[in-house]
Length: 481
Image 1 (tube, rainbow, N blue to C red):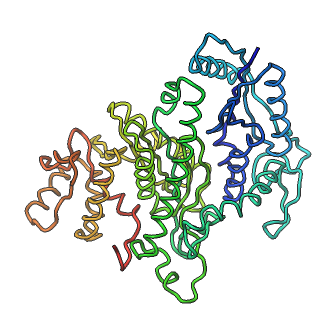
Image 2 (cartoon, rainbow, N blue to C red; image 1 turned 90 degrees about the vertical axis):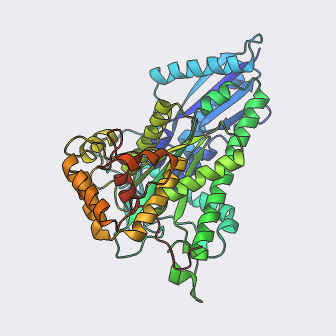
């Protein structure tokens, strides 16, 4: 009698992204990505995206796997938790039916059991300097004495293990000019300037349905392998494009340093943190977030060569020293916003949403937008999220505005958009009368805007998005290609 076992890691994002130190996030990502290494069996199962499935010869064998995984987490990855279900194999069922039954039982298990893998914190304990848990170790790695929890210690040990492996994996792609950064403030930001960090979260659309359509274990394995390879290859292609663009002078990053005879390896302004299944999170310099998200989606679509597989992305941009976990949660919410618009429009396309956090404390995305993006007469000042092609058209529109409109006039335009229709109409007529400045609305999705005399169509405007994009795009270099 055989048994199926399905294991799902819980709250992966909270575990990985809870720290404001990139090193801790990288270590946590390494632990999540490798926790199943000693348990996966390519002949009897598959793993990916925080899930492990195995077909076992007996119930005892299945239980032994769960017990050994629990021990491995306690010893090497404290703070990480999982749920597991074991079901007797029904020979009359096909594989997809068995998987559906396992997933249903797993959802029930998640609602009833919460695994605890860390020690409780008491008033007599010192608190970890990098989180809410009790401190159990002293750490000197940052040049001073700091108390840390066992969770943080495990992440930092893992980060040290991962460092050489990851650098070797990407070094040939980046070239000798670049290295991967281990600090958020070393991603192409310039010292003394107002620096920003972009968190990019990209997730596949309806990939779960795609897996449900696989009839055999072999089909599941092939799809999982194909998705994992494509996600990784698309990242490498994106990093190569970034490095080439900087090297050729298209984007003004390290322009002086890279042309210097004494140039040393520079931190490339992108750092991948986690790839799991059909989602990826990376950080980059603030003005690169949108263009690199578009680049990554274009690359993975090309690699997969499957018109029915699409992706949504959320890009959150904040000051470099803004709490990282809050920026990440904003990126997650923006990805959900993109997926919601895709669902409403019933389009099998890739969608992207973006937002720059201007407050000292980030709150709910929907609430922020209701307050900050309404004119006095109730016009919606956001047109985003966009299909990726429409966003690429908007980027071109923004570049055209930047080339032809004075900054003072753009500032006036932004101010007018927040006012009532009469003031918007007056500004529109001023532009029409003088005929000096053109309104750019390239793209099929925006062609109706030529009929509006107050910058709106259907109760919305595209122009605030364009004006905000001006500050969220990389500065073109002197040797633009």
